[in-house]
Length: 164
Image 1 (spheres, rainbow, N blue to C red):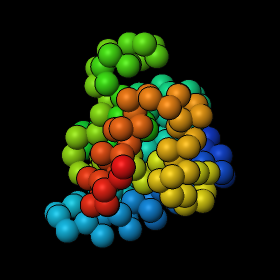
Image 2: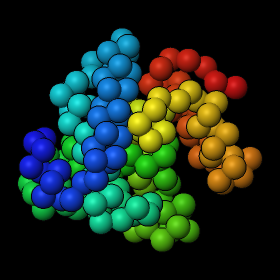
Image 3: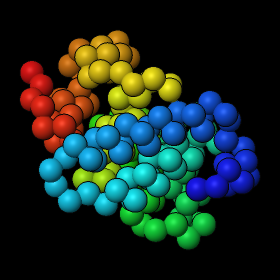
């Protein structure tokens, strides 16, 4: 994406730096996997994952971003990376509870999973470890929130590392 695209959407300098940090982390995750990953899709998806934040800082930013990209004729693969990058995924039941359209926002493809998890492992512009993310989520959502188990599963799928 060009700088003009970000300027047109009124991306803040911080959001640009965050997106670049997520892209860097996503590239590293993709390279470390011993499977076939579309690296160009990961790079572009990571850079665009928060495009909806130009209109909302709420949980709905993923849907807004997907709609912006859909209207611009972006590929369905990129649209889905953006729409499904929230946390470690949101089930259709959880979506209803938090006011999102009732469907699953869980990452399905390896590229979606990589971008989603790279975003989890970047706090602002700094890379963080999984323990940091788990502590943060437990503080926000409670010790037993189902997203924490999804986060651990996603971490294992993307890094190959078991999490207890």
